[in-house]
Image (tube, rainbow, N blue to C red; front, side, top):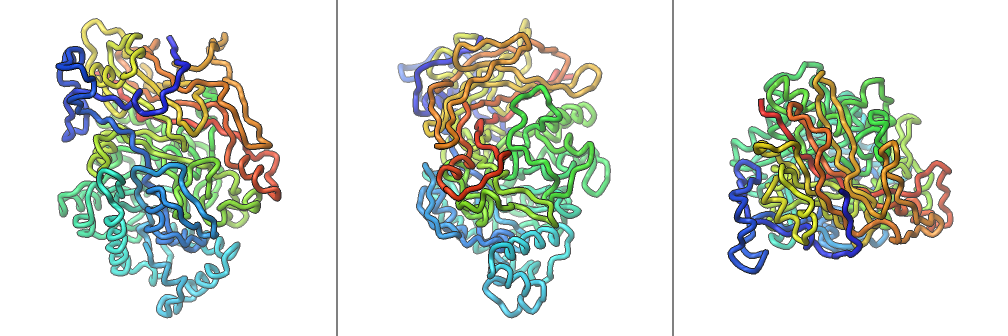
Length: 639
């Protein structure tokens, strides 16, 4: 039965309460030690002796600064120092001279500048004679200095040449890039403040295989500068095949004793390559490929400014919430898609295909958790609708972005207004340190949102009961009787008919109320076909599903003209216990939670209300239903 509560608790108490079970960090899992411990407390305090993650920490791992070549070419002048200052809550000046600040500081952040030519293009802009001896770099220097369309043209040409492997040799010097990496780790190390703010070390490996086919990965270090400096980051000048990145990761850990993981993003721009069942160079995947990808890529960035890659509406026509911030015109160079590509680009399809591949190889290569980050190239992590500073400086606030192009390849364009103010990442961690945050990422006890700080807890087990959703400390029960997001369901106890799930969400105090919680299930049926279903499990108000099983819309209080809304609909919190009504113990499956807010104004509406000169076209989207995506929980029949 769906449950909601009319009261609101504007803290993390509801969902952050832990937990008295054994944490097995070596295995990357959380398992109950003794269930009876949770019901026989040694003392009065329910918080004493807790050993589970209690902190929902907020941040992102995908921000570019002026040290990324395409960012500085596009006009970005905000460097990593300023970007980290901003993440800590400081006020900085944007590349277009505007003051900007977050509504609330982040708990952590990773500057993820491209490893390709990291920091090198600064010399091109500054007119280094050795670099400008190359005619292409001289042209780029002039374009960067001119700004506007000339600078945009430099960015587009740079992306194309990088994807084709034809960049000038002067900007691909490995010794220069390695020296810049040492300077980057210096900056990040100074910003790191364990217990208060975590500055993660990392970079983006930016494969645009074949010219704009997005196979990008962010590499995240658990380590500090001492280990991170022992090897130069992998670049696409070394290879643009993901397998080779995994080889680099293996070599790094063997040499340093450190730890790294990789997070792919923008499957929607890969033109069918991100989750394909063959390698980009056309070789069929094999046992080694499956096991290696599963080892190094525990997460996927499901939402960011260049589109949300959860599911495409054409692949899930019955899912009324699938058509959300979809950017599907083509790849990164806006090369149009061909039939059959979409099914290999979206997270839900990959999660289903992973189950199928596990039947074949014994390992699931797409067993990933879900996170969000921005991929902004302004040095400003920007995911608040009323505080959106765009993808590039040309997309920073101003009336001209109502008609401007974010990407323009030979007339194939993506408009600025099609960019989304997304996303954000939450981790359930023991403390605000590199080690604790990285460990949460490895075990997939993380989730992504499109910007709001919606608190989400999601547990799977076999003996949750309705009363488990009534208390104010549901996480205590969740860890005691089940596994959290990112985990595997324990074997079913004797007599268990179907798995059940304890799921709760608490609204962001700065954002809209909650419309509903959904649980999305994917499985492989008895005929070997991939299946999925979306279940509404908790919702606000007294709505009832119709004859078609669909829940009526929550309503809409948005006034586009004033970019305002009221929280007179929806609920501040939702929580329930849900049992799978269609469970077949012989069929492997996964489950993840999707939390939907009521409609609120999109950044385009805020722009239109603020800038009288804005001229958004009629088809520009002015409202948004923000959301959160939990990492999945997997069921295996065990044979």
